[in-house]
Length: 173
Image (tube, rainbow, N blue to C red):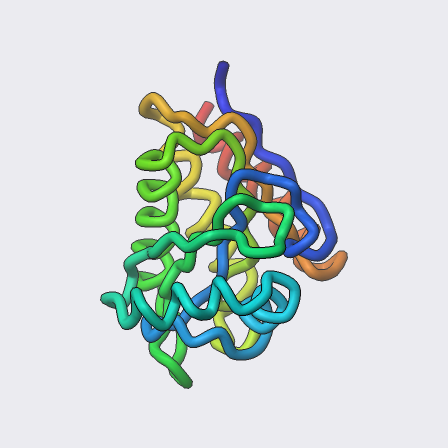
């Protein structure tokens, strides 16, 4: 069954999926934005695992439990250094490595935020192009993933991701 890609507005920490993705720094410090919401809703277990695992190389991804979240796991995609900025290359690598971690666990569903567009200041359009491009590339080979969600915080981000997906799919034909 080919994977289905979904776009929705909402709070990623409410997703009942195998894994949600954290827009992480390479120290795996759960600060603000998505990471802060994960820390608050997921409970101390996730943060304790992050402290044990981190730091990880920029562009890598690490897996922790989902703690008190509905998701079984959190995949921490390190697109920036603590207090730093996300770059196109670090975002591409972090997205790719997140998908590889999902495959290693045999996950069927995953939810991504718009990584790097919050405090890391990465442009939404470029984020959508890179992340969706990596997902489409990943899905060209056999994948355990059946459902891939992009959970976006507001209508503007949702529209950017939907339009970017339509353009990239049209370009594939």
